[in-house]
Image (cartoon, rainbow, N blue to C red; front, side):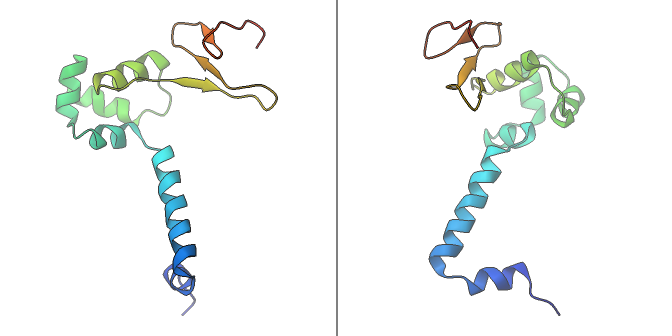
Length: 114
């Protein structure tokens, strides 16, 4: 039988193994699904659907959708008590915050030279 990932991890030093596990945890939290966010807030689909004025099957469908409108995502996040932020990053410019109403804000001031 070949070497398993567990075998490889166990062969590493404790510090190296912890660093890898920390990186994996960090990556996992960066890419949460809507379902993961809702569960982290300890809400059921029924509870969140009621807050949004939707039926539970509609919310379930929303959580599986891979192409949501920003306004829908914003409502979803705000119904859980959160705030949606959208950042645009270019390699040669500082990051730019885009609000969902069409204005761009860079360091607290409008910048039309994006």
